[in-house]
Picture 1 (spheres, rainbow, N blue to C red):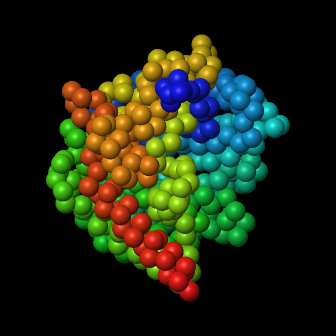
Picture 2 (cartoon, helix red, strand yellow):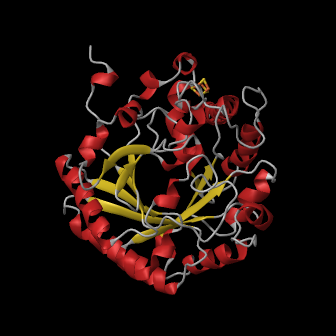
Length: 387
Ligand code: SF4
């Protein structure tokens, strides 16, 4: 019988291309600048046109080898708009030009929005780049965390950018909003503040933390579930709305998994990780959020000049994240929710001295959230069957 560890690696389907290594904000929870890994200090401030071309050719080579019908490329930073309009125009046109005709490119940018203007949006419209913006709920919540170097909140600038993006001529390029959860702020107020901007999709992110450095408000091993309580309030508000006001990726992924589907989210599901970061220096890195764990954790020691993406797939750490349930802690492998939960986001499993073979530090929250969603969906399915 073939084991998962003997199976072929899964091709990379999503790239995070770092175009700038610095940021114009100083958010207090940022894993790039405020946590264990400080490698941004030694990276080039901006990606060079030569690195862009080499990166695009590596992505194209991998797409052709594996006959990929679609590849996602997310332009990221730091703050990617610091790269400027001309460099972003070059990045987008190079990626589109180099990828094979048989592969369509889902090109995106994830920004704090502060610098977003019509000049950038015109470039993104030309190249079909979708724009995701980071907005943390209400103005008070956002401005508590997402501040400029002088400590001033950025909500006003971000709100202006989203209003620009929602104008009819740009609306098609609006990818959605990304919100880091703060359990000290009211969940439904936070969600409704996001809804004011009519996002097509909302992504709620659990703040990064692990067993050795727990996230805010979570005591490692404590059975209380502050994050599930917060998310369940939002879930019920979202699920009970008379019409769907937006897609909430985390909830949709949990429902999808409960119904037997596969997840495309890092936060839930036990599917193989098919995601790779290319930094401004052309190095291949694993998931950026591993910077929250310890210095150097995302490094592969490989780069776009000397290595193909296929070679990165054989890196032991990349390989380990493609093994699904087999690679999880014993508690997770025995867990009745494992197919939906998947052990949670990889960095949240870390414990100093033990590595990543642990349940998520959010385990009680994940259990409670999944059980709540399952109960709501099951009740609806039975009600529908009884009609
Ligand atoms: S993290 Fe917890 S809920 Fe998730 S699979 Fe592991 S034991 Fe189950």
